[in-house]
Amino acid sequence: MCCNCCSVRQQKFWVFGLAGLLLIVGIVLLSAWPSLFRHWIRSILPLAPNSFIYKNWVTTPTPIYTTFHLFNWTNPQDLNNTKVKPNFEQLGPYTFSDYKVKEDLLWEQPKVTYYGRRTFHFLPELSKGRLDDIIIAPPFPTLTAAKYVRKYRRIFRKIMNFAVNREGGGQYMKYTAGEWIFDGIYDRLIDFAGKLHSPLIPIQNDHFAWFYQRNNSKTAEGNFTIHTGRGDLRQMGELQMWNGSSHTGYYQGECGRVNGSTGELWAQDRQYDETISIFLSDAARFINLNTVSNVTMHGIDAWRYETTELSFDNGQLHPDTKCFCVPHHQCPMNGVLDFSPAAFNGPIYMSHPHFYMTDASYRENTTGLRPDAFEHGMHIIMEPTLSIPLSLKGQVMISVLVSRDEEIDYLKDVAFDHYAPLFVVGISGDLDDRLVGLLKLALNAAQIGQFIGLGLLLIGLAMFIGGVIVTKKHKWHNEWRIKPIDEVSVLPKESTSSNR
Figure 1 (cartoon, rainbow, N blue to C red):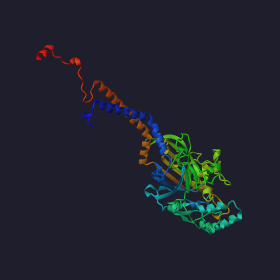
Figure 2 (tube, rainbow, N blue to C red):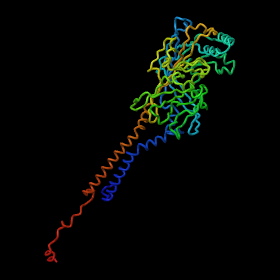
Figure 3 (cartoon, rainbow, N blue to C red):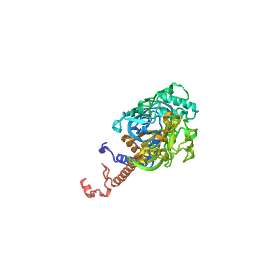
Figure 4 (cartoon, rainbow, N blue to C red):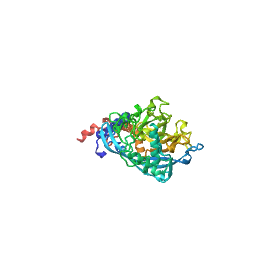
């Protein structure tokens, strides 16, 4: 715009108009922007096809790693030696990248049902060991068979003993780390049990491994139905059903209720002292974590949640967890969960690694386990405003009960009944730099808006004051002052007449 072409009126219009506009915008940003921004953020948070968070939910948005620590039984030859306790050496970690894609999405707002296909790739550079490492472990099939017939009459136990002896039972098993984790182990006893086609022994394969047929599987974990947050952000990410049911069927009452988050989306508006829950499909149960401290990570204020002694309680510390005891089974002491319902009723148990936060009796008949609070706990560090996890570390140990059994030849002379650790599976991840940057922007946008509003307000005020000053001093461009009448020269009257 050419200022030489503007009249004084036009100049005043633009200056005072722009100043007024800046004042209005500044006042709005300064006073109303935080609430407006929060309302906008809450409107885009619910999960929906092509929504703001959809692409960061449907596939793994940040690097996630799954690790395995395997326990090598160093003295299996001393199983029957009353002077030597079983010793276990932890090997690993064997680290895998863990990439998950949601498939077969069925939207029924405010719910969505999906399968999760997880793909694992071994990362030797992040591992301490190779997949061809030799691992010796207790005879899981033999122990399961022995436990299975222990409740029956002696004649049935004799028959099982014959089958175990004939079909390749033993006192230990020796295979590579890769076979134990994903590749699978052929076992004659399992093959024999599967060929019986008994509904009491639902075995569908003659191989087994801790994560057998899980790599790149869509159905291994089942399907999940979660709340999308539409209409109620307090339920966002909460699991509604697993495999089409609101109850797992593995544990009774509330302990079998499908509950908690799958770990990818979290409910909003949490209080500091509120417990959070994660549902573990492999364990068919939820685990509670409690807030322990305020922390700062990547310059972001967050809350740290950790598991406690209540996380694997069986009613010894709190009566509400008594339902995790499996009917007709001896209930484990505090800190250990009876995992048999999800493991073909084998003598399998789940706990923190190295029996951390468990009763001391679990370690008294073995050597090599050293529980450590820093190494063996679980935690989630979560930004509380938007419920975004900044860091997570989850891990559980699976162990098997090795006990003397007079009717099974391989087990009749066991010197020490003991809980033998098999493996620790862990999952960990940190929010990457891109998502950290977006989170910081979202958290600071309200304050940034207020600072911008304050700047606009000051600029508008300065323009208004400047305009007033220029007006009073008549300093607008192209503005000429008109001289007063008393300053005009008047010719003498005589001179005027004579000239005529």
